[in-house]
Image 1 (cartoon, protein in one colour):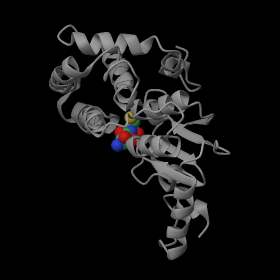
Image 2: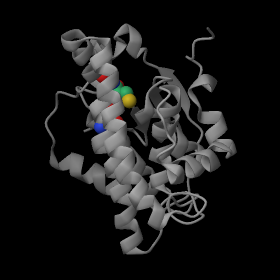
Image 3: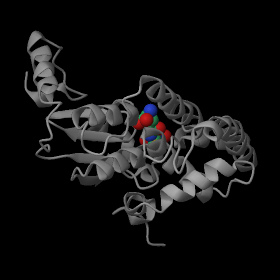
Image 4: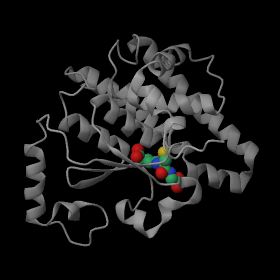
Length: 248
Ligand SMILES: N[C@@H](CCC(=O)N[C@@H](CS)C(=O)NCC(=O)O)C(=O)O
């Protein structure tokens, strides 16, 4: 089976050849060799795509940006559905495979390029704590306010209820996160080194500011978010600096 057939949408079934391919990928995961071509399917206001973009920037992996306009429903096109049946960004084409889901992609990048600006420490307890923060944001705060959920709430209950919903998700999620970060944060979420926790915090913090959430009850999140926003990788990753950002 060709490497490309391992992408979503390939009609061939998984075969022994496919597991051989997986072995090959595993065999080169520990090298520093840059992949030949990396393509990120993204949308400038997608917080999940923003996470992947940050990891690529921090690890110094060049990539091509392909915009998928979520506001025009391009994620539902037949062409894109072949890449990701869940009809969501991000999608990352790398090493001859097509990967979907930002957290799966972040972990791939970390294991494939462990020495390029490591985003996870060696300590197992710290790693678990970082995964907890990643999970809090990526499995609670973000999914409850993704575009299609908010559109359904607005259609059923109106704009005002939609805003209350978003505020409630932030209140519960950020209250829990604040309690964690009070104990773990230095300059960033875990001490003074950028980790995957920071990679997922940056977009969520950016969205909270864009949506004018009251951040006063979360001083640690605010301090860490502002420190992260000073980093050059973060500055170049902000939605306004993406090729598909509207100039209005
Ligand atoms: N678990 C997925 C979630 C991806 C996701 O929610 N993507 C949003 C943008 S951040 C999306 O494509 N939404 C399209 C839609 O709601 O129709 C990941 O982490 O990549």
